[in-house]
Amino acid sequence: MSTPDDSAFDGPAGPAPTSLSRTRYLLGSLAWLLTLQFFVLEAVAIARFPGYSRTGQVISDLGTDLSPGAALMNASFIAQGVLIVAGGVLLRPGLIGLGGRLAVVLLSAAGVGTLLVGLFPSDTGGAAHTVGAILYLLGGGLGLMALAYAVRPRSEAVGTTLALLGLVGVIATVLFGTAVTGLLGEGGTERLAAYVLPLGLAVTSVLLWRQQDDWQVAVPTGEEATLTKRQRRELEKAEAFDRARERDEALEALARKKEQERGAPAGDDDDPDDYDEERAWRTPRQR
Image (tube, rainbow, N blue to C red; front, side, top):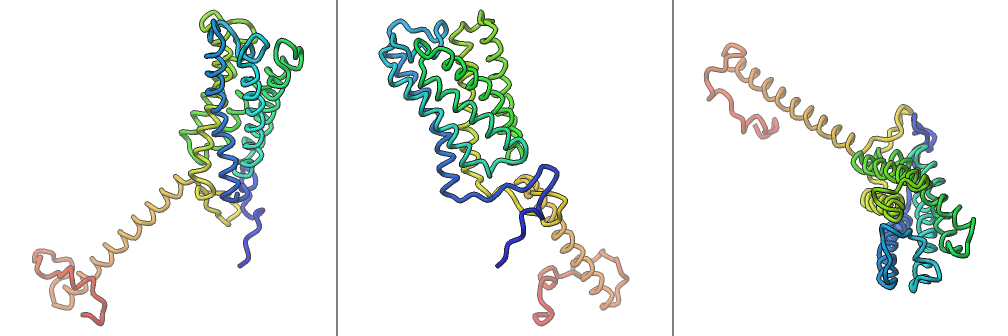
């Protein structure tokens, strides 16, 4: 059976996203979900660093020679970069419109940034480490805001959550970059800017895996690219209402016809015994 050309479904937001295989959804979603590894390995590195302060010291200090868990922390940075980029590449066809394209670019920049942070620790990496940190923090916050638009047709709640996380990340990045850290401390402000990305990616991964391609229904009219899952539910409700109304009208018409056959005035409903509801549902042969 032939399939319609994707270009026939182009709408205001651009072409409809390409269908992804179940395996690709699984691998991409797992990649983004596993970015939560950062919190686990950071906690282990902090536990091995006597006197370390989450609010007073930046995350990069955990990857320097002074940190007993430096190798573990830098490995986490490198793994984080690979997971972010891999998830974006695998899930790109499932992200919608311009927001999806921007999200992959910005999130890839964030992934490259954290990769540089892991490869070039702050005590020896110099400018490469600084560039990596900037790419991660800015790319992460802005990438989440773009990702919000890419997934909002799937779920307004998740889209709104991602937009808020991205906004918090950008604001915290600006505060950290301008040394306005009196409220949360230098380390606390940096963590507020950095933590939003793995949290947002984990939420998105769950949404994409649960919905996969089932959220969209192609509309071959050329006017709209897709119906969202919520729009499809509303359409189904409207169709059910129409069917119920047609059934009621048919029953009323049958009742009037029966009254006319008995010689009673049409529309006279005084005698409830004149209408047999069970008979109304029978086929003509059964009657």
